[in-house]
Image 1: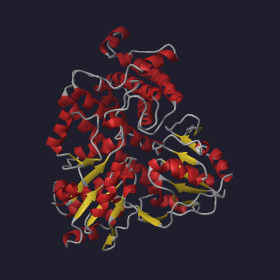
Image 2: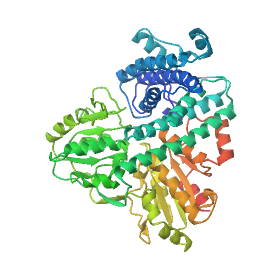
Image 3: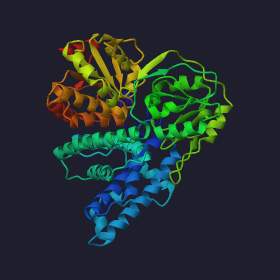
Length: 552
């Protein structure tokens, strides 16, 4: 076994990737990611102690956030990037430690005697880094349930980091979120914490998931306006284009500004589709429609786009040689042999001139499809027609809402969600967010009295909108418990951001969630039993059986 990773839904044999990641990452990169997380835990141990003495280090919090983000599935495959992050982790850890020692009532030797190895281990050269990386994979204790909860907490923290980073680049930050990242990571090193302690922290992670998504919602809407119902074009024009994928709206904004008057059009792909619904982006005449669908189809779709592709966040898959020279990464994204657009300096815009110049030399995109697709049904838009929705429920036109948020994936069992949507009765409405929608958002499901039967709230982080919508409905129907509403939850998960969305729903007390297409490999049988007992989480079975249960 040259590596071990089971943080995503597609992990090999439903148990763990041990030779190479199903995602495409090498065993070396997987091990380096493990070592980076190991060192982040060491930084966090010092950080928690420092905060107890009133010392806060925002730069350390930012480093932890960005580093965790880099380790989520399909974000960064570049070996050198992780070596650099590991070397930087040593420096950050030393800085936090020195800040702590300035107020610490004791010697450095006494402090180091109190902390675990990840707070003291260091390397003199790269060879030692690579050697250590092979030794620190998934931590093992005699208690598999402790391991399970530690990993569940860690993956939730990765989800928080991804969403917090999006908010951070738009000027919204939270010291409390940084503090919890440290608290959570440090807790995974504390052998005195039992199952109940870790379960409490997992629920606290869900609470911070809600807070982080609310912060990002604030950042997005204050910068770009509230999403509004929008018909998005699916066809292509005759001008060269740049395809933007990922989730980062500021990258899109800066690219749109820099492509004005160049004759180059900008298209969205994957989780960038919801950007089409923000008022601020509609002012750009060269902001074209959406091209393609879910992340896992990019090998086919990117090849046909003809122009350059900008990957702004996670969701990149190893590119084919036929278009690899047209792929650009930025932010935490990385892939060996792919050009990377450097980050901002002194908060100045990124320089996308290389991407734009490349686009000018390319042919227009090959058309994949035509027509339009609706989006923009975030909480503000739905609240605007709340009376109409409530009336439709009260008079029986709408019998149930089905929350079908989360992730898409490449495996055949994901067809379940397409069939589920097709078989839903015509008096039901789907509430969705995330790339799971690409399994059914182009189906002709019609509307109910002018209300589309698929209400797309946006990106996976816009699952917060679904929470707000549920709370608005609870107010309208005068119920205290959202579980009393005619809402069913059928959530698809793939990676760590979806793990956080699930924890956020559990923190809010949502029960009877159906989860699939299969349960996480990192959740032990006993931990699953606890979640089933407390929240009645259910694994997907068949479309027919699940529909019968949810419609009962």
